[in-house]
Structures are given as structure tokens and as C-alpha cells.
Length: 56
Image 1 (cartoon, rainbow, N blue to C red):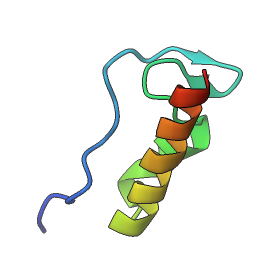
Image 2: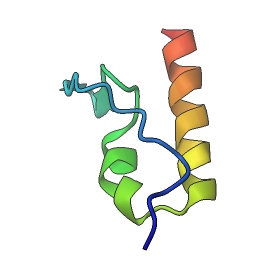
Image 3: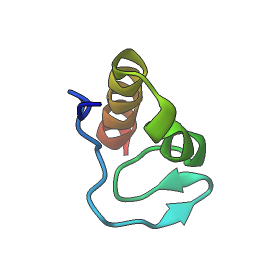
Image 4: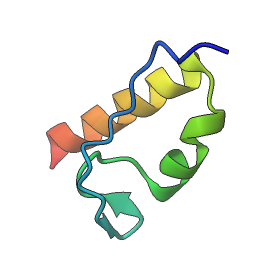
């Protein structure tokens, strides 16, 4: 098995508030599902997290 081409957006600032990580801007569900997600799903998670970060 090879490592995924999509890097985790985790920045090691793991603080959840209202179901959202204040470090990487992923939801609790996105964090939990990251390991099982395929590359397309991971790209979508990263895009949503980036949009949340930009809106904050």
C-alpha cells in the first residue's frame, strides 16, 4: 500500500469547537473519516476546510 497523494490538512492544533477543528477547519466527521477516504474525497474535504478557513 502506498501513501495517499493528498496530504492531511492537520496542523497539530487540535481544538474542536462546535464540531469544527480550529486548527485545520475540518468537521469532526471529516477528521474521523479521513483515513478511510479516497483521494477524491480527501480533496473535497481539503477544499471545504479551505473555504471555511477563508470565511473565518
